[in-house]
Image (cartoon, rainbow, N blue to C red; front, side):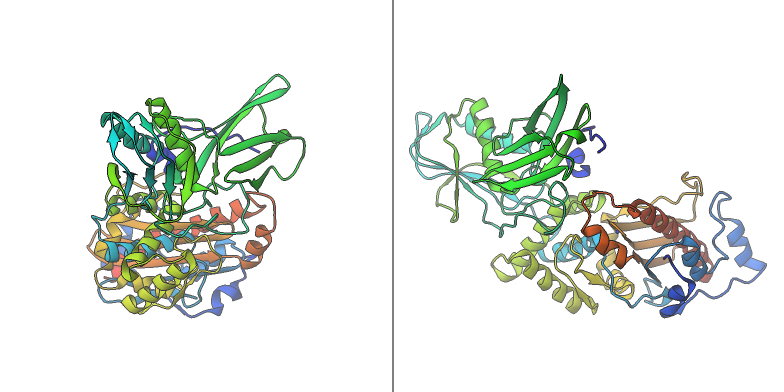
Length: 511
């Protein structure tokens, strides 16, 4: 197992912490290719103006590019004109496939239109009695509002507000409320225990519901620590525990304790030193554990945290507001944070119906809303794209991208995709700008978004590659990187580049 090291402790660091392909398979689905480029004249001049280090793909057929990619499984795409909705080129665009994290683009549209770009999550501290001479004559309540991006430094701001108000002691209980959203121990069941991108979720989340595990060899033994670090703080966590055991596999194993996460790790896999983020399964208790430690450091004595199902009435003593939803979604699409997607999707559904729904039901509700909003047909089991049950076709993805008002909302949130040459060097002065959302699972690789040429033409596209047989086999393995997954992903990304560079050139000519 490779060692994992922490390079940055900022929110960005926490954020950053899926054919043999036969020619007959490529030709099996519906196809339409861009009309041929005439020799000479303006068309030839446009192609000649393309940067010399761009890949020579403009005159190659898309089907040929797919066949040359050497991808096992299924590959399909759709490219269309945003203004007219005309489909310019399509290969097998009607088949529903797992969209992976492209699902987050769907969730972004849903959240923006239901909640609005200025929406903010809030986390509060309440008191059920009066504060007299620094002593709270009642219970102190840490009340989550669902904020998916809350980190330890921000939790500490709540403690600072309490300290500044003169609070020193709580006579009653320290209560933690995390039921603003229905809780879930993991977003996608069946995945490896240690995957930090598959955490729990609920109404009180901290550090993307991950704990930082660090180890270092000391003689024949190891020193280990579990903490809740963010940019400036690293409080020790008591509710997540790690033991090193003599075994080969599994590398990590998880057991649920009474409000605790009990981990073991194979000694032979550790090497000399390393670190990684691990998911927590009791997010509200995790936040309460960290809050109590921060309070003690500030001179505020608190008892151990107790979970409550119902939010007690009380007076607000402290409050923290998240960044606006627009900024949160931009980070979500850039870093592909699954927790953020699930929380904002479920929060949007809760606003629509006046009550929160479980993740799967909320995802189905979102799918119905998207169908009514854009005319697309889809099936969603989550809001993030982790589920293999999600299905979206390329033509329906493009239908959403072209729907009235969607480009103005979505394109500014999307990541800029750099065009590169065969040596992976950025192509200077490329005649198009690509903004899109990527999606990656083992043996699933997707990309969907917008391509704007330097002539002003706006195109939308969706590219889905999926090897269902290899994907099924990978789910039963104990390997975080199953054999062949990296190669599949690399080939798929090269094909994405080839297709985008082809469309950038031909989009200038045919517009």
